[in-house]
Image (cartoon, rainbow, N blue to C red; front, side, top):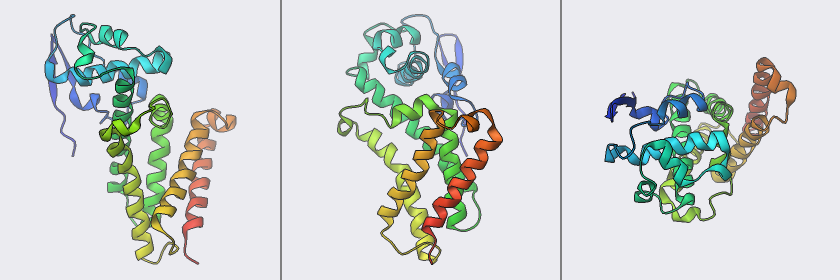
Length: 241
């Protein structure tokens, strides 16, 4: 169970869990808007500076895209001096990496919550995970694009980002290995199978986010049918014969 904690910053109170993206029922714009701090300049709780900057950076990303993201504007929105962001981020890429890491953490919460609530065998769990993954992409498209983009040229310099990104892969792999052990899935290499499943689910998520299926975009019911059909085909490729 996620424990909601509140902290006070210069006369206002905000939910710490929202900064980390724990409220998965909110849209990305609602979440970012609710987490951007607006204290008086130069007054902030030092322990929350990094998260306030990430929240402000996410809001700026949603509004202006990666090219419009800069540390000076992020500092202004967070209500701190222009030099303050450099306490945590060496440059723009470091801030982008932190925003991407935050996205992977929120995705992790969403798919782990879905996995914990799933009942049935590995096939059922895999379907539930696929729905959660695609839902995250559709609800938080700006984060989703950034998380998997080439904007971060030196990912190896950000081990926390790597760890957050890898967590979803490992969870998916564990479900596939569970299905193999039960004889439900074909006895192929689990890492290769995980890569294949992730590619298929991520591919559909990306196509939907980018509006490549206009009818799905205009009709939620049609979109849900497309997702369900696709996930059924993914499972069919795994089932042992």
